[in-house]
Length: 216
Image (cartoon, rainbow, N blue to C red; front, side, top):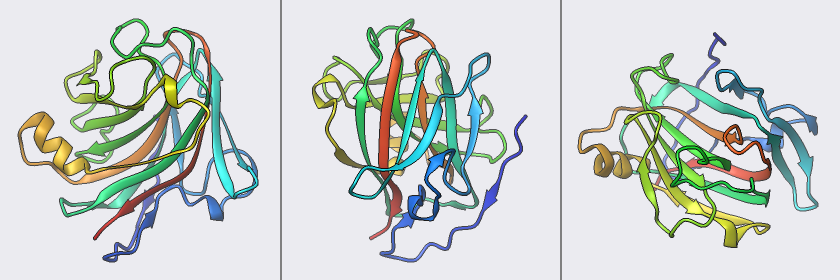
């Protein structure tokens, strides 16, 4: 089991918390400082590269027949408070045949996910996870519980018609948690990014420029 890296982030009202922190990362293969990777069981992790696209640093995630969790875990979890997770992504290549509605094809070139619950038990433990997911041709707003577990929930954010363009998004994970599971949300213990092409085996390439937590 990969050990978790504990990170302390001072939260100040109105000041975004830069989770991805690409400005502190050297260009080249690898992850930003403080980020961890854990391959999905039986899979190889997609490749990651920090590069400059002319407008600043981005992280590119690419792979075929691969799947992994990339994440930062918080030493001081984010308790329920007004706030939003905000990100900017684009998909350069989506896996052919992917469909979030099909159990054997629910791959995604990129997902931003938020973990609620006990630290150290993120993957398959007591925590619950919301995936804000790039899909394919599913209806806008498509959402469902994961085929893997009722503790995981998938929400489609973008899809095939948005491929190749940068898109900015924001979500209120605490409000989504209450709506999905109809209970008080525990603290957020980690925020991460995922790519999975293990179902279709097709290639995916996606980039992120920003991932942050914003308070009023």
